[in-house]
Image (cartoon, rainbow, N blue to C red; front, side, top):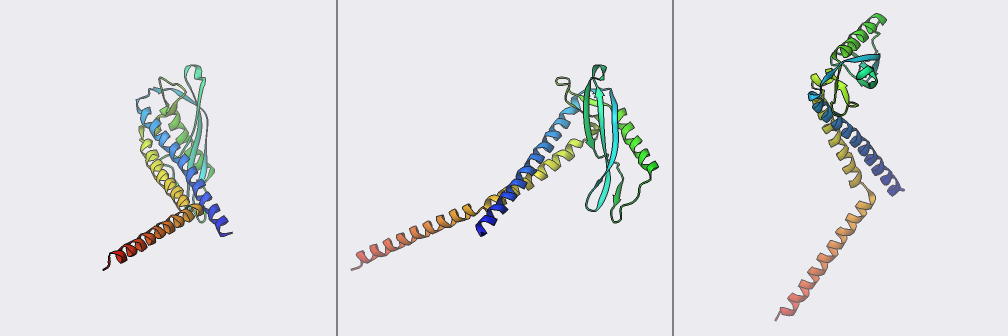
Length: 200
């Protein structure tokens, strides 16, 4: 039973590590795309839908914006993105503050109008690749890079701990240690026999 739970513990740690590693790869991919987007041309875009919702953390809450853009010839291409504005108000929890409908509408208009005015950065070689101009100009790739590296290190740590705690590995290490000790004991006995033979 102890071995069973040890296996479950290692599997859970490795699975969480793999999920975190996938998130890190996505973050690093976003950072690389944002960095490349600095050289993409700015194109006019139309905001077809834009909404705002509260995101709740453990100690505070903040606003996130989700928008769908149309761009290209005849606005036949579409791009959707969700982001946290850099100047989004943060509210301490416990209790959660009540935000009036008027204030929420004003924030929504400000964030959505800014996204519409900024337009999109679109790859000339691959027109399906697009990003908000505001995200490119404010250097969000640095944030994504830092988060990707941090999450990646945490993911590798979880995977390593899961592997180290794997019961089969522990048994193999004990077996190798015992084998080494037996080998050392045989060598010692052999040395003792040799020394006895050479004694006068």
